[in-house]
Length: 497
Ligand code: NAP
Image 1 (cartoon, helix red, strand yellow):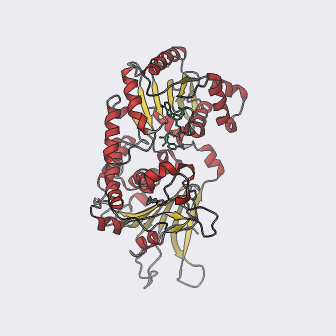
Image 2 (cartoon, rainbow, N blue to C red):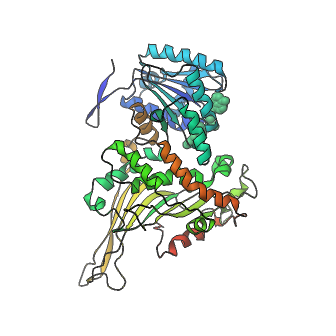
Image 3 (tube, rainbow, N blue to C red):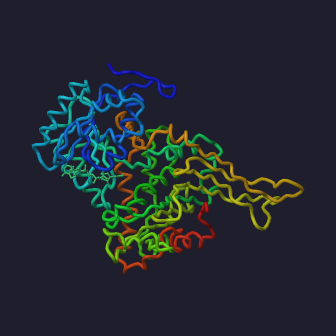
């Protein structure tokens, strides 16, 4: 019997599921997936009727596997008994994904565990591995009969989903040989973040914003994903990807779509409405258009020489032309957003770490208060990370015998308890998947439209002679060109320091 429990005042039901995790010895599994599963277990979403089969090439035993998981969830453990209960549901099967025989063994183990935990054929296949293996794995899952007839079969895959539209389409076609679109859960972990999910609540649950959310009232939107970290140990991968593919194609365009989409009637409409926005992005088709609207940068050593430059990374070519910074001006060709620029920027080794959306309204035009200098713009800022919360910037009269204005920041920044009590992105997304909710996963048509948009930028940059890199110092605010892009329109990035 599946257990029922109360969570957040709602009656919830334990889920029965067999999760087969490909890449169980890897970094993602260790840092994110085991803690996420443990939290779901602690809350009761998975309890008695679940099992996890971890697979990878390493010849681990169940015991060793459980020891590794124990280390990864250690900081969350409240009781040894609870931990041991959780660990008892984990099994390890050495497996090379290219070896057909291993799928036969995996099938037998899956059936055994399905019966043992009364899972009723519900299966999640989580591919925490390099995408080059996705096609091989899904093909074998179907061919060797791991996809069940009874219950559901769902596939979770990690980014990157291709490196351009053509490769993404090829990958998608491979997956679709074995799984239908409605079974494919493409993770963009940004969509699991609390404040990203809050964008829709802020927009649609507040008439004060939704009524003004259009070209008549909004001057422009800024989306900034700024990182202090360098490429760290990901240099090899990053040098084939760059900021455009690594951040703009997925996270930035996903955030933009949530900010800009038409109001959905139900949560089921969210992805449909996001697809529409992404298909309405105005493409830049000539090199002139690309370079006018998108700029790139690459970090060199910091001014004090303590932080190395990108090209000094052991896994990066000495003359690499890959961008670690991108800023761009994006337009959406629909009635709501006609003429409203969405400025986006992202970069590594910058002076600050911050993901934030700033929606800047048009100035008020009161003859009483706005005079020749105009009134400062209202702004709603949505802090995604590391601070989480909102800030609404409004004008009021300065205190005293004056009609001068003062600008106030009405700010709600959530405290540590909020972060502690809010589910971590992977926890939320894994639960969404086992509950069959696809809202926060990327549909193929979103992926396709995003790739089509960034491909023309990539192609232009790839066809040009080497950029003048490095063009910003590690630890700085990024290249001057990122500032010129917005300032030549008479606007400014909302920098916090
Ligand atoms: P990783 O640490 O390199 O792990 C790769 C896993 O694949 C290992 O468990 C490895 O185990 C297994 N593997 C490799 N070749 C195999 C084969 N032929 N047969 C069976 N197993 C094989 O990579 P990761 O960082 O966990 O990333 C996994 C995926 O998640 C990638 O697509 C990555 O882009 C994505 N991702 C990762 C992060 C992150 O924070 N790490 C964040 C976002 C997305 P063995 O060596 O034991 O075979």
